[in-house]
Length: 361
Image 1: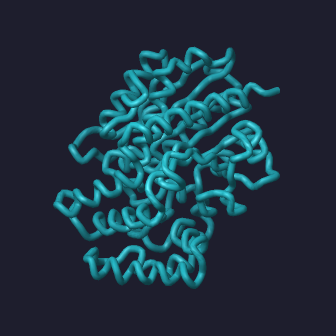
Image 2: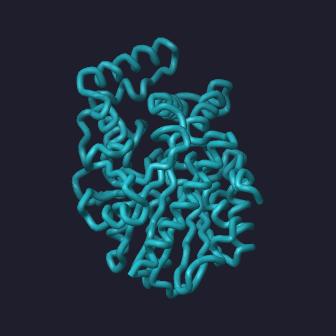
Image 3: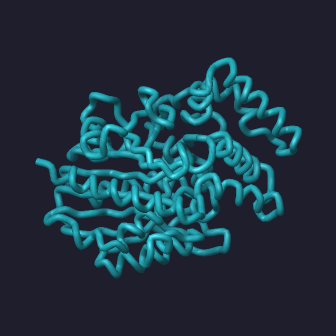
């Protein structure tokens, strides 16, 4: 299988390829069945593959599909890693855990969110405590997700959003929209009111597969922010903290942090990388999001707004629905050879750097 053949056109194709290739490479496979079905009525599941000794103290973990539709790239990166024979090159005593399509609903339905309309990377909070507030999103909520998606409504709502950027700055707008919100269930970057199926499944996978691990490298594949095809290594830690310093040592000085303005990502609430550290207190976890750029950020936002309207007020099977689905697919997956090659090569490098880091000391 060539690098380009590692990428799939649908969730179903990606799942079939992952299970087949992982099995051929000697992986121990497990599957977690999702309660929903695909648009065609097919089964949805999160699949995992384990390579190496079960009692390994050093483990590389990669995860695809945290944001559903972004799974096209993450799955392709995982498949490319497998087909290059990287499992046979794992150092003695080191293991790898590949988590494929942790949000299979979003992957299959071309959505960034889970079937609960929740952004999985805003869902990792303690729901027994008061929910985080985002008054800036509250101010913009009706403009971000208007009840109509006509040309007039798009122009009017877009003006409100751009006026906010003019008065408060682009960074403030990004933080307001994408930082996470818990009051608008039909809106963008909604964190939910309880742990989602995907969060519960990821928790089960990590806590049952990694009780003996003492040193973990965690790579979460994402798309939609940054320059075309560039893989930004985003550490979910502040400079000077152990997690950031290790990531910078492993992956290079280009490692960024959302907390100091060096990242294309705004600081967010309830992300999975930070939560993983808490889930595995017995281990030293070095986690990054590997974020690949696609189209300009305002095009990504427009696609997300359209998709939110579609699933709240429209019909995904309509002509308009199919156009919006093509729009959001393009926003998170560039189905062209050069982009796929950039994703595969940078992901391979990151995985090799992670393994080298795990072997330190």
